[in-house]
Length: 320
Image (cartoon, rainbow, N blue to C red; front, side):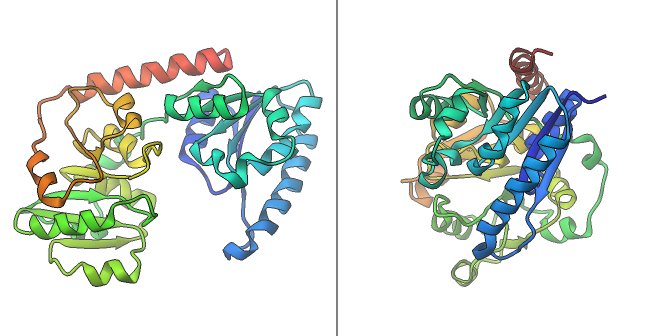
């Protein structure tokens, strides 16, 4: 008998899925009915009613909601009337204007337990909403299933005679795409760069280097096989408060990282972790001088310590 449920909107979130598994909770995803972004508002209202109906028709002791969208807080407030524990799992996007200023949001949050994935986001949430939240780090990816698998897609992206660097991208404004393109041209003889995601036309035009591959959107299995095969991962952002998913995935697969020199990354990584921390105002030539990654590192010990900290947080927050 499951005593709790983790509810997400839009898509199945790895963090929510793993949390449900760890707590033996039900994992429920209310997927969007419309593909067009212009119809998203209708999805929000439909999911509000679907969520409310689910809460009314089911009886759990604990309800966890992934936010944003913070509009999910409205049907979630029904939980308060059911005398059950209400928990909101938030990331930094919750502080965007459209999500942080909804009517009665601060009151609803004051009646719940709020968690986020790092101390930087926690401090911002606490300050803005005048609450005391908790930190629950992101779960590590379970790698065993992917280390032995092969993939035709992955094989075509890798270069055996070069250092393969995976660059997970969404092509958002905070990602230093120009720097990465310039870097790939300078390192064309020694490195092979693999850009994920659907690259916009201007990126495809600017990238004429033979050592840059564009994977497009690939499924989770191929992505994890790919990250298990590369030599390093570059996860860069110009936003000092963004924690990139690729960083936790790199730790999971024991990969050296090239990451942004911000407080979020320094909080997560050990000072001896094989990482190159770079500031986004560097030129590609300056960056190359910093690309000397120490290879000797006890990844297993680091992962064990990271996981133990997460387990301790789960026990404290959920009382299990």
